[in-house]
Length: 224
Image (cartoon, rainbow, N blue to C red; front, top):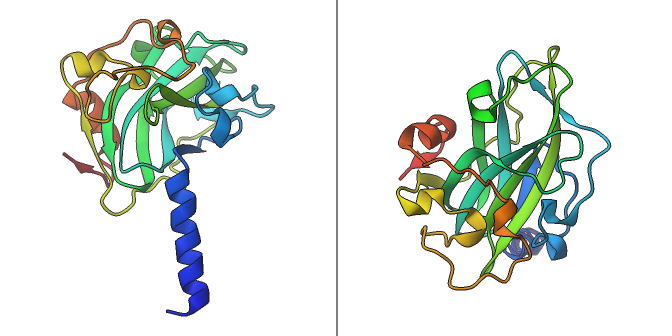
């Protein structure tokens, strides 16, 4: 390999290893490595443009770039145009993800049963991905979405899974624990240095089942 190729590969590795995680799709509000610990949304303001979600399919892909070899991940939702910290809907209960690089949940449900209300054309919401912090607390990133009767469900090219990437659901107490309170192995954190108040995160959590996570991640991901 030429020296330039070695330098490029090394730089890419360093970049990935220093990043906790990135929300790639839907496009996030913004990203600041130094502000990821701020709840909600990593300190990012509401986006001027929202990603459209199909009212026909009521599901969407979520593509992430993971910077740790194992992570506790959770996906939440808040309804409304200005939800503040009211992320009280659990789209994907906390689960364990392993492997660096690309990771995708190709079909996260946004149906009436999940949301508690029937989505209608033009209804706004904000999706928040939460992971465990390093070493404690949580990391947060958000994307603003809107439901649309004219949008079709599509899986973007960014929705892919890197070599060695895998996911497994937690069970019991680990499944009901928020990601910002969990270790990658599903154990409670010994301390919480993150700024995210746990009382505002998914006030009503459901128990993770194989059906919930398995149906979401089967697209190209090894299930442990």
